[in-house]
Length: 260
Image (spheres, rainbow, N blue to C red):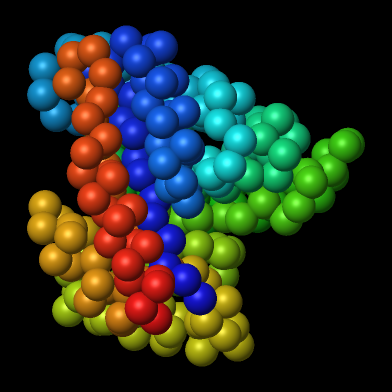
């Protein structure tokens, strides 16, 4: 299968319409997947800089694009009722003509929780909540009228070996993590062990991996190792976005796939 490229256009440090322009440009450039994220404050740069809510942003992303798959990388399970989140993705699925991915994770950014009044608890608490809520999301998607246009892929973000990767094995169509090749191969082996315990073929889970700052050097080895999609993050510069690094990664993708 050809390797894909995904971009997380981060909804921070940018005017809203400049962000929409970046979504359109990425779609026109031919990126395979465009992601937003799910936070309430910037993760770097000015801590109180411009920032936009994730689910609304995803809806806008779906509305202004026509080609790329779209999703959150990833939505925080703590911030919304899980059945509401599933229903919202069903609605965005129809808006996007079947392009949405339901990206979900347990949550980790303590400031979001504190500022918006959510109980932060512990990492095990948040993972238990994710384990509880994933089947509720799937169940709700099966009850909605109209139904989704397709089986909406679930992407679970995180690399915790005991719990998160076990949840990936049980529920996910896609897994996202950050890794170099050595780390990726180790995590893949752990995921395969979890799949074996429940009788699932690990090849049915696509691996979506974000590399480090040397992404152009790491992308080829990751693709050779079995990664289905390499992702890059692009943050706002105060007004808009510099998509130059994305253009370079797309050029790499096209060269890699042509040579495969």
